[in-house]
Amino acid sequence: MQHTRRQHLIMLGGAFAGTVASLGTATAQDATHQVEMLNVDPDDRQQRMLFKPGVLRAQLGDTVKFVASDRGHNAQSIDGMTPDGAEDFRGRINEEIEITLSAEGTYGYLCQPHQTMGMIGFILVGDFTTNLDAVREAAGSLRGRDTSRRVAEYLAEIDAIATDEGLA
Image (cartoon, rainbow, N blue to C red):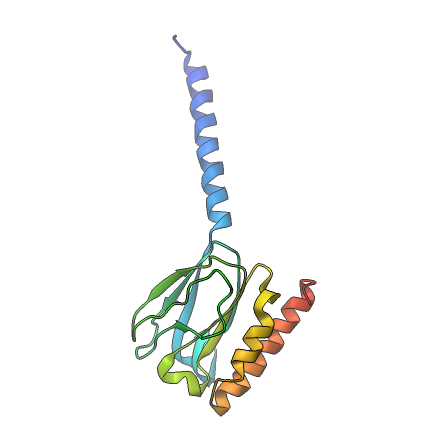
């Protein structure tokens, strides 16, 4: 069947629009977030040994990439701070790793060499309150004055997010 030039352009435009729409949906659903592993916060030089951001809000299916912005760090899940159905993770020193968020809940992670200096972080996925009590309990086993201060700060931030989102 012969098509006129106008009909061909209309069909081509429709196919292109459908492709763009499906790509837009995929990107909107599955975002990639970066968490930097830092010696010093470039925005607040008083803050040392940290993940930035320290608390990350994400969606189910998103990917988190831990970026070795400074050397000497790793990212690994904290025992008791991984939602049911999610896998624990452990990167080597100086290794950039990516994890896919496969379950709703709160994910707690740390840098093994610098945990006592407060190098911890949290990822909040979907209804992140599902395992929040277990996260609070596991946080009690973390050692270090800076860690205790940062855990308290981050948990207060997480509580505020839960309240804002009507999850508290």
